Length: 171
Length: 171
Image 1 (tube, one colour):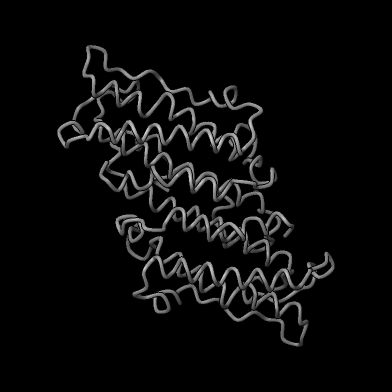
Image 2: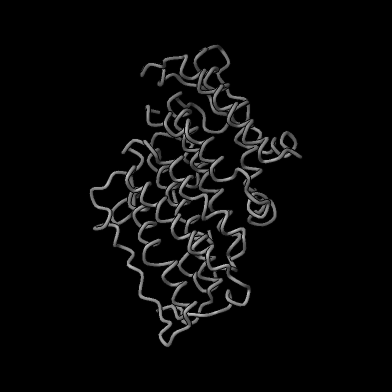
């Protein structure tokens, strides 16, 4: 990750607030079918990532201890952790968690050499700190793609014949 | 389109500003390869849509005159109209154009019956005002999907083996 990545990580809470704050449940609870995620579920997933994935894994790499294998990430934690919470609560939680993550990241003043330090991913094997932090950035953008796609699909029928021009509807 | 659609149309300028305002050219000028669009190009395209597509077509339908066939939309106008403009300028232009569009839309106080009025799309044939306005909403979301996907792809190599988990990278 370069300084470019930090620009994205800083922006995501504001982007999600601009898009999802005070938005109707029609949009925030809509999904793409059975076993797919609504925007509300996605925000819960991002919160869980702040708490258990990115910074904890980066700490593990930086410590360079004997066990450098990451704990598996629970992709379904938000179904219990965020259950019953409003979008307003979730956006506040995410903003606070992200601010805390970035404060810690900045405090490390990472060098290029540290970016090459490695840990062990439970599936992929050896990965670098740089790859982990870059993935954090891409993961934000990937879920913003998902949220906007899921929202678009709520109008799949409403657009009538224009569906043929909106490839997002059938992704 | 229902009132839900208006919520999205109102938010898009703020969402784009939160995501793209003061962002490095690394992100705003990145694209997916030859003949694909950067976020800057997409914002130019959205501006052109405000000026020539959505509201002008809605006016044509509401007038119910003899010629109800839409002028074809120029998908490449932004390459000349927006050439050389900064992202800050484009975001300001889009915000102003969208505000003007929504002021006109609201002034119409559209009824359910008016939503069923029709025009002629140069390719699809007969379409309703409701379908046109719904497409405006879905088009915003579709391009937000595109912008976040294009940005994510700038880190396609940087994420290393995580690419296998980030389907957005290969869309």
